[in-house]
Image 1 (tube, rainbow, N blue to C red):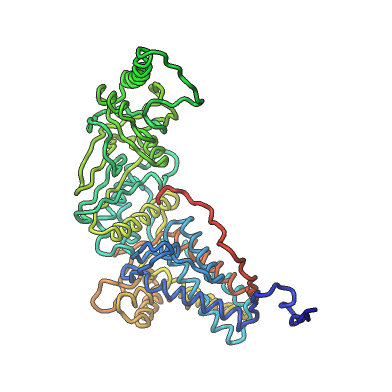
Image 2: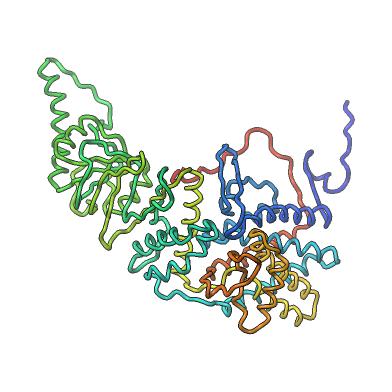
Amino acid sequence: MALSVPKAPGMAQMLKDGARMYSGLEEAVYRNISACKEFSQTMRSAYGPNGMNKMIINHIEKQFVTSDAGTIIRELDVEHPAAKLIVMASQMQDAEVGDGTNFVVVLAGALLESAEELLRLGITTAEIADGYEKALNKALEILPTLVCHKVEDYRDVNKVKEVLRSAIMSKQYGQEDFLTELVSKACVSILPDDGTFNVDNIRICKILGSGIYKSEVVRGMVFKRFVEGDVSYAEKAKIVIFSCPVDIIQTETKGTVLIKSADELMNFSSGEEGLLENQIKAIADTGVKVVVAGGKVGDMALHFLNKYGLMAVRLNSKFDLRRLSRAVNGTVLPRITTPSQEELGYCDKVCIEELGDTAIVAFRNEGKDSRIATIVIRGATDNFMDDIERAMDDGVNNFKSLTRDGRFLPGAGATEIELATQLSAYADTLPGLDQYAVRKFANALEVFPKALAENSGSNGTDIVNQLYLAHNSEKGKNIGFDIEAEKATTLDAVEAKLFDLYQAKFWGLKYAVSAAATILKVDQIIMAKRAGGPKPRQAAGSDDES
């Protein structure tokens, strides 16, 4: 009989073999902080217009070259449980505002770094977390007083361009003016008179070749496809959209046809052709000029479409069909029937164009009621165009937030230093141990101008000192770091029109503090043994953009 070896008493006794447990300051808290610090340091060098790019090869060996924090976080499979919390906070920021993901990661990392120093001085995690919460509440109280610009009329392209410029500049420094023009034009052109702005209504079509300055905005939709038949141009066209193939319809039940003579055989096939011709003739008689199909267009159907002068376009994606139906204001029909006038869409011009060696089908709506706009991006490499797309995505999300709340704060690190100045003064009024945490919170905010300066090749500490000096005077609250100057100097962010979205800062502060406080309050990490066998399947995401 085998001798059973008793397990060591304590936690290990309760868990299965192979389980791991870390507890206490040394094992759990410092470990978590150092993992988050590493992660935050990686992202810090990608912050701002002069931020460095990261080259990431994900689990399916797709390569990304970008400084966009949202993409880096999404493609890195972060395993560490504490770093995952920061990733979640950053993803929430992405969902809420669509920009400022890097802000959350960098601030959370800086807060944890400061907390480590306080822990080594003997202050407890609970006191630090409470102090951070107090500092956050005070910061959110101060934030509305720092608002320096408000957009009242967001249908004015020039006013929109002014505020979106810095958001696009942080991703594509040097091309911001041209890209801002495109994004502003596209967003304002499809803004509904009532109801909310939908980000999904701005589509992006990337076509290799030429250069970035050949990009343009198309009011309507653009598809990288060729038409099916001979007709390749239609003006003032009524459009019918089918989600099924345009072909001879198969019967739903299996049937056997008994043919006894050659005449019956001839009549059978001609009857089928006659039926198809009548269907297409009935569609043509309603005034339709363009037929869009969600499946293949059969040879026989194509023959009749050409005969009646109808243009045929095939779209494989059901999402594209839905968007097109929204763009032309038509209804997607599930089977081939004669459409009523209410179900038809309308488009000013449907045509084939060639950009480089890529053929595209453009559905252009020049009228005021265009519901979807497409930005056609040109560029030399796929990676470059992907990065342009991310910059535009940030611009579009900023526009969406601005339609909800048009307030803006001074950029270039001015807001952070002003918050730090006022929070340091607030810390002096607190009697308890919280004051140390509040002061550290203020110090953590210095990381942003410091990162801007260091990524631009200047001395970070030098810049922070200059900014503090400027912010101590009454008129200096809008002073930020000048990334374009030869030597490290400051500028007035409002005069330079460097604006940061109020909503992005507001939610960024909330999420970063919440993630840092959660991580600080963890004192034990207990990891069960991993299950053997293949990994559980992830829930399938939308096949929209893949």
